[in-house]
Image 1 (cartoon, rainbow, N blue to C red):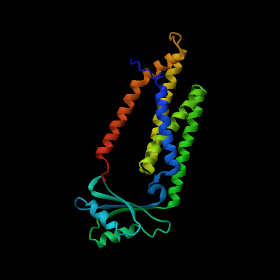
Image 2 (cartoon, helix red, strand yellow):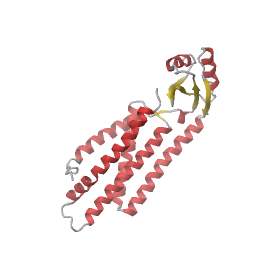
Image 3 (cartoon, one colour):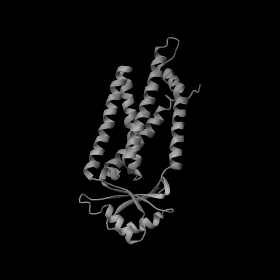
Image 4 (cartoon, rainbow, N blue to C red):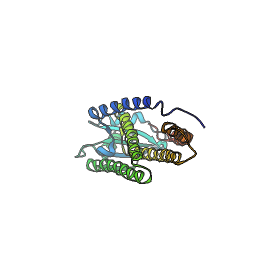
Length: 253
């Protein structure tokens, strides 16, 4: 078993986390998040071409539309194109606007699907997503308090807030688009963070209850962390493999 001095180096970790949290809070306060079409409302248009689609030509054609804030990317194959763009409440820019523009430039493929997301629906999705995360944290707190001790519950909630805020900070600082897929990823992060918190808390409790274990609180906590460290690394690595596969085989921008 490894013997990494986690407890002795905890001040360094807390210092790094504190700096990241300060940057996150400042960025979120002044810049906020760049919300995607799922939350702001807009139009999603799927086209299919007989040959490999020229994404740059499509972008140049759509850019002729006034006030069109759009995203063009491949999905599934080089022939399939997904066009997303933001629209106002009156929907002065809609799917027909884009279709007519591409048709006038003689580069319109077969329209596979057209979907409109109204701003009100986007706001509802955003609010429900936030409520889902808060409810998850509350349920987690109650579970850990009854399963372990209240101090472990506070620690788990602090870890959840830390992990979620850091991710939000990254999206805010680098102006990355925050949409439903990111919200789903946040919920997955909540799940992984909770899983690690429960595993660590359970191991610490077992070591404290084991009469054969001798040593100070610092020694027992450090031993517990080292015992679950390999499991945490393996779990994270297997998740990383899935993410790499999605990155390689996913959509092309």
